[in-house]
Image (cartoon, rainbow, N blue to C red; front, side):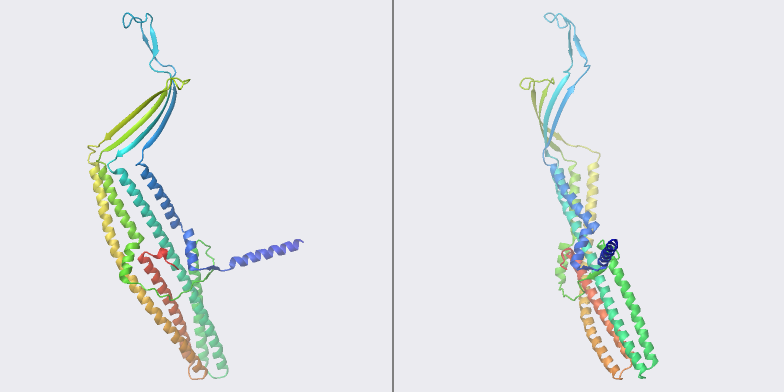
Length: 447
């Protein structure tokens, strides 16, 4: 019975190990979705948005009245007393000394006070606008964090697919070269070719095997980087379902420039920073303005703990209108206004420079995308020509009309054409991704 248990345990462990070694089937959309779930920068940006919501509520609270309830019960011990001697105030007063305390030794009080700011020099409303601008700013930062995550994962995914395709091309090249070596050796045994042809075929096979190992190393490195972005173990193997494909995307230059200016999160952040700098100037100026508050208070009190609420409880109401106006603060407000204006000016300069940089980025990516599109078409045609060339070379070689070296050249040309085609597809995919990023739309891009 124990032997069966051991066999069952070994079977379960073997099945688990086999399952653990199975490649992870992953599409590009799934990779992006997982990255957004695990990326720390994106998570921090989400928390900043929640903090921004709380800041709006905090700033808004300054516009509402502040209501405070105070209650106390006090017992004094050893109160000093005042003694009035007899006849102190002349005839008609009590003939004996009078002794009494300066205050009651027991006191109970409860008060409700409401203070409403009527005017604060514009500080409260400006602070409220600042909190809303800050909330918009952290939302743009969240969008930028999402864009960076999507962009980095998409690039890594495309790199991994290219590495996978390179391995496939290398494997095909090795298989064809190995078949050619066998055919050449057979022809050598039949006395139809020289030993040099056999050696040359073997050297070509060895070179392709070396390229195959390099391609496998590149695929492993690309997989490790993709696994790191997805917070997976570095030894994770992937079965990538999306392949490199030529899906034509047409962009208009002027429309792309307008889209970039309207959608770029970094430009939106700079514009919001400029608004915040404007509000900071207003807040600094407001320090010279008066503040007006209205206060209403109602107090109930009694002079002993054992009270009769209908007879011993006294009420008191207070209404107050107060004005506070700083007339001189040692030029502190003027200095703060100058500092705020300087920050505003620097922000405006930064925005102007960023707009110029975005314009150049869009134009550069536009040209790169057009070039990548043309290269894909050229490389696709090269593959067709190289495949046809190898067919002709192989047929002529079998007929004894072409040398072994020419067949090897045709095989190398086909391998290079296939690699060039996949590299062109990869470049085109990255060019589209760069264009979406330049337009500020990569975060919402449909993969």
